[in-house]
Image 1 (tube, rainbow, N blue to C red):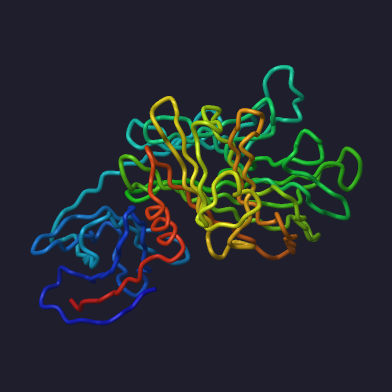
Image 2: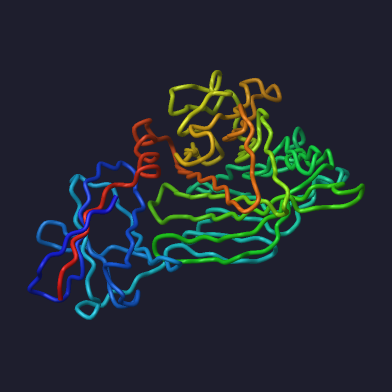
Amino acid sequence: MLLFCLLSSAGAQVIARFTLNVTNSISTPVYIPLYNITTLHDSAFYLREVVGKDFVNVPFQVENGQQRFLWWIIKPGDKHKRVFELCNSNSRELRQKQPLNISSKDGNILITSGARRVIQYNYATHYPPKGIDTAFKRSGFIHPLWSPSGNILTRINAPDHYHHMGIWNPWTHVLFQGKEVDFWNIGDKKGTVRFSNIIDTYNGNVYTGFRALQQHVAFNIPSPGAETVAMNEVWDVRVYNIAEKMWLIDFSSSLNCATDSAVILKEYRYGGFGFRASEDWNNSNSKVLTSEGKDRKVADASTARWCMIDGDMEKGHSGILFMGYPTNYNFPEPMRVWPVDANKRGDVFFSFSPTRNKDWPLYPGNNYVLKYRMLVYEDSITTQQAEDAWKSFATPPEIKIERLEK
């Protein structure tokens, strides 16, 4: 929520003042619209935090689209009241250093933080191991996802499920043009998901990311041997610059019908945003905890705002907090969590599955958006930190905006 008021100021350096009351234990991205604050170019102002009688420069980023937004990160602090000022850069030179980087090479997009790798999106077609049916080939998925210490958290082409692809977002029982299609179990040869093109990439001092178009392709529709794109999907993946021992990653999926035919995502126990975990994890060295206090033994089929998964790895102990957004279909979303005896050793799989207990009809002419946030961490986090992280995602702090006259 944004509150506006207009103040008089003797000086011309300060354009606007932003006041927040926060109790965050995790770094929090925040943003405000700039349309009624300033029309200055991004290079003509800087952001600082008021700390007593001193000022601390704050990295910021301007998102330019149909509207213009100013983004920055609120670091955890002792004080609940935080004050920031947007200033004319003519009064002080500030050069920002971009801590994150994005590159495209060899069929993938890689985001790094300094020398450390964060996340890789694979747009080239990946084939399964030699001797396995090439029906399992796939493009448009995330792998690896690294922890800040360098542990690989995802897994692809596990022998028990060759269609598991790190972090991916297909649907299982789908009704399209009177026939059932399966975009998840691609070995059944009823459908698949393919990368189409990179829409754009972006890089800055607060976040770095990309948007990609993917196509959900139905096989044997309208006739045997034919292919028809049933749904177009845009992924927007964004990595925030928050801390040395944590990554914060936003993932959004925007679905729409590619033809004049509706698409019905049928009720089924799994489908949607999926995560196949590293083979390092099993039932003796990892744990699951949901926002409702459920562990791995009882989490499956329950609903939750967030789900925390972590465990021992080659380089210490790493984990991921998965968070759902309140506007997501069927929020709080049902989950698919593999039982403790999965594949005997207790392999880890998690999915937010909004169609677990009811159908989701998609109609032509509409966009259907799902938003998730991932907090990737080392060691462990508390349930209070998990709750704080979710609250900052679902209900960002109220910002009071004071515009100052020049």
